[in-house]
Length: 249
Ligand SMILES: [Zn+2]
Ligand SMILES: [Zn+2]
Image (cartoon, rainbow, N blue to C red):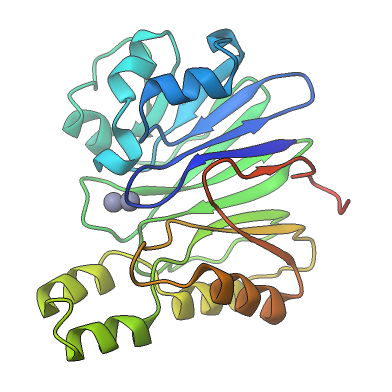
């Protein structure tokens, strides 16, 4: 399995998982569709579907083009309604029972997260080459733990100390800080969540959606890698992980 990061963070989110048979699952579509087309060599047919967490533009910007290109998009009813695509023939809904959605050989299970959007979701994505991957972003905490994870993509948006210092220095208004802490995941919460889960089978941890101004990529990566003992990456545009698999490389 190969993971490609097209973009991550408030300027846009889009991630591609490509299996050895060439099937591609898109996770999020918050970039220009042209960027996705370039990343897949204009082979739209390889994309078996797109899983979309919520209706903020940094995640959903290209949803109309994705759907009209014949790619199925799976999201909550709340997200599909907010985007005005609930009745589109390529829209697939995670119903209130959070049914499983299958795109090609990928299967996706959704769960609720805590964020200021219509009906935001997190995902457990399964594939025989991937194992079970947690995809968790745009949530200020997570009430669940997940058994049997092999790969993790998780938000590490900000560091409390950087935020505090900025408000104290008058660089950043307090209301902005309050919005961030009620909608995004801090490095500390991210680390607590990792510690609450069984990481024994985890091969890769990818930190996503870092804030441009309230994070420190190098330190976040180092702290999580040291705490977990797992190979840790910060998602930057163009990052490719070739062995994003179910067994350690
Ligand atoms: Zn976001
Ligand atoms: Zn959001």
